[in-house]
Amino acid sequence: MREKRPARREFLRNGAALAGGLTLSAAAPALGQQAPAQPPMIKGEREGEIGYGTRSKYTTSVRIPHGGRPTPDNFGLTFHVASPLQDQVGVITPSSLHYYATTRGSFLPDIDPAKHTLMIHGLVDRPLTFTVDDLKRLPSVTRLHFIECAGNRASRRAKTVQETHGMTSNAEWTGVLLSTLLKECGLKGNAKWFVAEGSEEVKGASSMPVAKAMDDCFVAYGMNGEAVRPQNGFPMRLMVPGFEGILHTKWVQRIKLVDRYYMNYNDFGHLDQDKKEAALSYQIGPKSVITYPSGAQRLPGKGFYEIRGLAWSGGGAIKQVEVSTDGGKKWNKAQFQGTPQRMAHCLFTYGWQWDGNETEIMSRCVDEIGQAQPTREQIAKYWNKTFDQTFSVPGLDNSVQPWKIAKDGSVTNGFA
Amino acid sequence: MASRRVLPVAFSLLMMSVPVLAQGPTYGIGRTPTAEEIRARDISIGPTGEELPPGKGSAKEGALTYRSKGCAGCHGANGTGGAAPILKSKDPTNPDVWARGRILPLRAPFATTVWDYINRGMPLNREGTLTPDEVYGLTAYLLFINGVIPEDQVLDQQNLAAVKMPLGDNYAPLPDWKPRRPRLKGYPY
Image 1 (cartoon, rainbow over the protein chains, first blue to last red):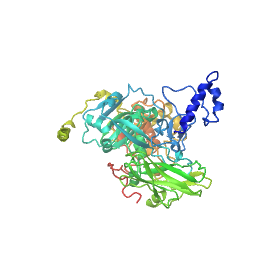
Image 2: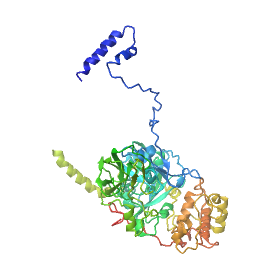
Image 3: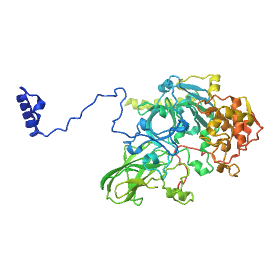
Image 4: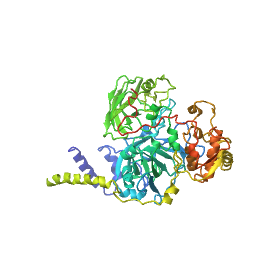
């Protein structure tokens, strides 16, 4: 630092001496021989978005329709839209990139929050309706939670992690515990289930156990520091932490307490023939995936790479993540970035030296109640089925996702 | 330091008052809806059919509504061949109901599910506009083309919930969910 001072003083003296008829910039070429050249000035442009900021025009990551069904479909309905997990930085999915799905395909309802109410009725002592302003007066919770669609499974045709795993996202949600609202209404003894109903045109409705309602469900009006986005349920949605995405009823307008599974259209779609398959629905199993490097990316050459990925479980917080860089022979403990939250994505990293040889990388996790993420081979063995490319995981698919890395650095789906 | 001793006492007093509070509202926030308001907004039809409105309809009437309300345009002339989900099994004689396909008026364990869904979700862009008679008729028509009820059976508020669906109780009950418990003990091993 001391050596630089004379140079600066000299610069100032020279500048002062030349100030007679020359501008400072005109004197710059002569000075360039003494001081290191500055990087060229980047031309600015008028700030475009003062009210609500936008991302850089060089950031082009977008959501895509998921699975075989086009979105919008033949009727103009939105069905399944997947989040670009390969581009996500950190643990929060930006609201604009949060995955998006609807009950049977639907349009986006245009709801005036001043006119919207949530009515709670049925097997309660006091039916009540709540406005958004009512909810904001009540004690709130702010929690990080993932939401994952039950249809989030990797096909062998999928190329990117957006195609294999993009129907899950993670946001910070703010709202009022459903238990708070239900206590205001007073639950009757025979209220064992509740039906939550949305206000989109199809009024999607699902039955859920009251035990879940009293444990940790909440009615959210906030998402990532602002109001819940319309595609995510504005002005209020139900959060059912760790349960299938469809149950997180968006645009929620009515909750009815009932004495049995109500067999709504959504419920009928959830029926299974097999008791064990039924047990693997509702609550999302422990799941993890490497997002970098992942399918369709390319490593420029051998050397160091920080492997990054996401892990989550409907059973609670993630306790451990392991990464294998040799096709599953050796498993290495990954590091958490931040403390894993219950029923939330957590970010894991693992430093890796790639030797330039062909290999397969994958991750697996264990949650706080001891559930472990299985491989597809393990799942096939459990169900006494042959593991081949036609094997489909029964229930929700939380299997280990392998990524193949070729000698030229290209990354492809390990199931292809 | 003194406050540290006072707090637990205050807490235990608060805890003692909880059972009393549990009987009544704690915050007094929210408005009591009128009985009419609840009736108007409550469109849930459960398996017992207790919420069903008065009305009736047969398959013959339903077939007319199916055409006049545009159902055929999306679901096909007779429940198949349209762009929207099929409403009639392509394998109707298969003794395994599960193998006949995931078709609402066939695999639903209760006819009330069919009624509820038509009433709340159909037809596209005009949801909620069908009259109860039209919904009873459409339900009867869809059950008839799937061989569940005869063509001349009239469905109404009294008999809809009693319709014997082909699936019966041949489905797994939903798990008795409890917090902090594995989905399936021993899965995958």
